[in-house]
Image 1: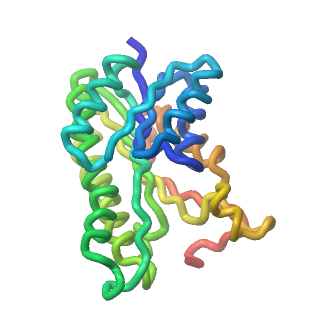
Image 2: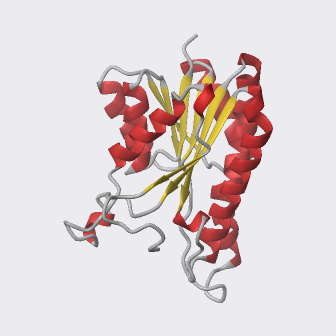
Image 3: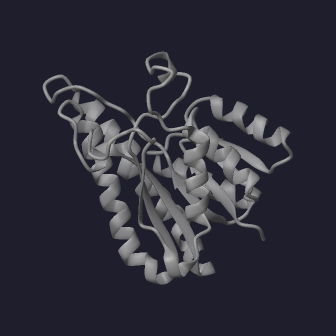
Length: 236
């Protein structure tokens, strides 16, 4: 049976691009998110003749994750690629951030990723392989001064990815962490980005994820650092 790709956090921008990229590359695609936007996106992808399903739930809800993985596999095929693209940007100093907001950032980051990996890993191991991709950020390497919640979540996600890669890589599971080192050009970011300001294009980012998912075992990437041309390394 054809394996599917499950994209957790298929919102506008990168999530949308990932859905189209993996569908066009031949994977049946499961799209997850908390808003009705994923249903509209599924409609767009389905209109091109691809197999797709939208799954609306909270990525940090354990029971919902178990049910969603089961539904995705029953309707689309075994999950051969898991992409964890969910996150929660929380800005502000520690005196300004509500403790619940800090918790929510961590739940949307490494905790939600942990739940999804638990859901798909047994099947991947039984089939002898699979791919797990995490969307990271500059903050996973260089924490900004006024985003301790976001930085803690992204550091945690990177640590989870590294641990999983060391443990399960020898068992045929390719785990990779993608550092999105810059601003992604979306309708929202376009409102404050200048037309010539360096920015990452969602479709180009998504192409790199597809390349990671199709790498031969003899040359796997663990960490891929992506930034737009004209943006200096280490500038941020």
